[in-house]
Length: 66
Image (cartoon, rainbow, N blue to C red; front, side):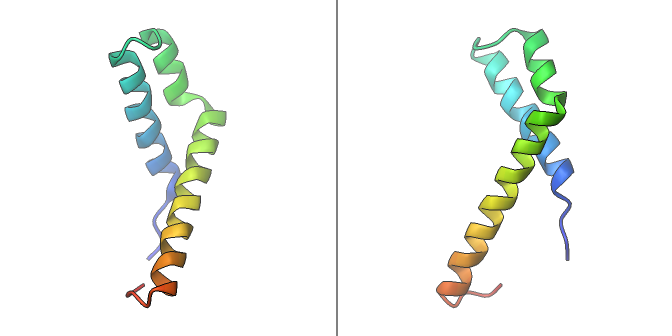
């Protein structure tokens, strides 16, 4: 089963941008820009993919079910 990374990246960026706005780090307009910027979404997608591969590697190394 393949999990599409793009929707997960968009969701992650919306939560991240929301947290930045909630803590007053950025204005709501800037938070909205972060949540939909294709460059930020690509970075988030790459991070999600890297974390997934790292967890998979640890699981294989330890003999866990993959």
